[in-house]
Structure formats: structure tokens, C-alpha cells
Length: 318
Image (tube, rainbow, N blue to C red):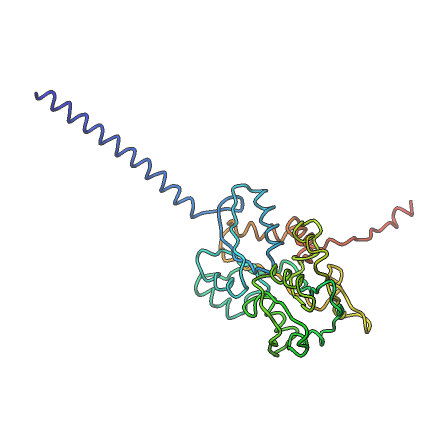
């Protein structure tokens, strides 16, 4: 009787010990996963970034190439208006934003107080704001004065499509650089996003749209090739040319300061260590990332990829 009770107790004790060991092992495994998920490196981990929607095609390409190089790295991008990106920067979950301006001195002071360090930010590339029109449009050449007049509603026969009436970098750029304090007219309509602008202009003969250059003209992108016969690029008066010269948006006209509608592309990184955000920033700033900007019809700001003439005088003297 006593032996059977002892055996039962021993069995119960062993069962309890096994259960405790299993529970501890599972807890250790879960704990280690939770602990390791807090940290990342340039080659592995997961981060969230917010990107101005007008830069979506080129940033999608940057992320695709980076993740193919580092399969354990995962960059989750949300595309939204510029103002929302800056609001996201105040959240712990957002590590980086990619927008069309850097931080002001007041913003730097704010983040330094909140974080204990200054966020990193710098220029990555230059992007042209393309003026797009329907293929059957009568007018395809514009001065800045004419664009101001159209945006102000002084030519009611023309409808303007932009990627939102406020909070977007394209709208802010047009307000700052073209309107210069004048309000938009009633003929300005807000599309949902840059693709919405393309679709609206493709369907409306008297419409004029404004989109970032990475959304049009890349013949290696099937989605962009589909718009070849649906829209066309307008010419805008050249900034540093002789009178009555007009320019199309291109890497050449942007590089030589001829096309007048150009904006910067910045990264703002909220990271005080060598993590995945730092790795992605370095990638976009160095050769491979800069070549991706170039291939997407932007002008790289960190590297020059033009043809340099070599000095052949030494060869000729031989």
C-alpha cells in the first residue's frame, strides 16, 4: 500500500518536473525570440518606414534590390502624403521616412529633446515634377506664368489633377515654387494618388497633371509602358537657356538646371546605432542605390555617373 503510494507520488513528481522543464524551455525560447526581435543589423531584422507616395516606384525598387541582397532583412514601407510621414516619424514604430525636404532647426531641436540625439537626414536624389497632358491636348508648351494662371483657375477650361489638395509634397512644391502664396483655383481636383493623376489625365483631354518623374518614362516598367499612348509630357520654359527655349523633364535638363520644376528627395533616419535603417540608408547613398535612382529617371545626389574624358596626352607622346 505504502509502496504504491510512493510510486504514484514519484510518478506525479516526475510528470510535474517534466512539465516545468518544458514550460521553462518554451519560455526561454519565446523570451529569446522576443529579445532578439528588439535588435536588428544592416543584414537582418524588420523595420517600418514611411515614404512620400510620389516616390513609390523608385523606393519599391530600392527595397526589392536590398532585400534580395539580404534575405533576412525586411523593410516594410507605407506610402502616404508627406505630412503623414512626418507625423509617423514621431512614433516609435517608424524608423525612417523618405520625403521631399529635410528637418528644420525647430524639428531638430524637438527630436533631440525627445530622443536624446539628432536624427540623421541628407539628400539622396533630385526628382523632376513632370507636367503631363492628354495626347490630344492642344497646348503642350507652358511658361511658369501660364502654369501659375492655370493652377489659379484663371483658365477654367483646363482641369488640373494633383495627388491631393494638401499634405502632399507635390502640392507643397507647387504652392511654394509656382503659386508663391496664391491659392489654387476651383479647377484643381484631387486624385487619390499619383496613379490616380495618370489615369485622370489619360481619360480627360483638357486635363493637366503633376507627378514625380519616377512614375513616367521608365520603359523597363510594364506599368509605365502602358501609359505610352495615353499621356505625354509637356515642355516647360527653360530656366537657364536663351529666350523661348522649352525643356522636357530629363536627367540632363535637371542636371544642367534647365528644367524648372525640380525637388529634392531626402531620407530622415531615427536611429542611433548601426541597425537596418542605417544599412538601408547607406545602400541608397552608395553606388548601387544611386544607380537605382538613375535608372528610375531621378538624378543621383551622392554620385556622378557621367562620362569623363580621359587624358590621352601621355599615350600620344609614346
